[in-house]
Amino acid sequence: DALSEGFSCVSAMSPGVMGTTGIETYDIIESMIKKIDVDFVIVVDALATNSIKRINKTIQLTDTGIKPGSGVGNKRKELSLQTLGIPVIAIGVPTVVDATTITVDAIQMTLKYLYLADIKNDTHYVLTSYANKLSPTLVYENLNSVEDMSDTHKEAFLGPFGKLTEEQQRTLIEEVLTPQGYNLMVTPKEIDVEVEDLSKIIANGI
Picture (tube, rainbow, N blue to C red):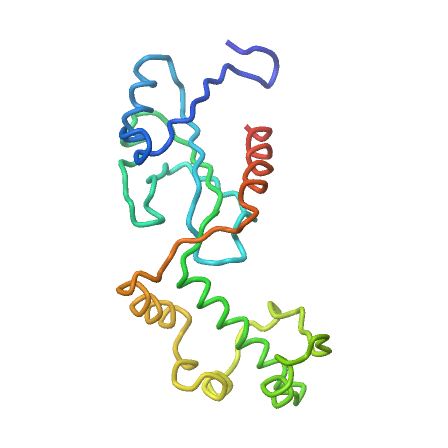
């Protein structure tokens, strides 16, 4: 029954992670569904992202469910209409990113920076002097305005590696880092504060 207009009864729980509880999140939620009368499930989880621009900056909503841990290669039982038998609304926030993504994004931003410098005929200054300047005068804040550049520019700055597509660069870097154990999953140092703020936004939205 509705508590008042626009509000309904909601049950909330934090199942934790299997590494802590030893119990699959799916099993915990399934048992709760069997115990109480549930119309649908809203699951909130952290996500891994393939762009550092999305870290703690976006909130993803889907009705197709979620696979806990899949973003970090730790696949658990799926939470979805097909597995639980009731609708599942998934809310996800990208909070972690791997070293491959950071490397590729850093390379792409540097490439755009050098491209803008080249347009201004300032490439030599950038490559020889900029890194030594305590108060740099050459700063390009509009890197996102560079949507594409020719293979000639890419190869001039990065050699054969520059001619690879972004996806090919990602695959190559991942193949280099992963066997060494260096494709780490990382999160911003201010993650605790940002998660608290994001949780309030999501809770108020629900």
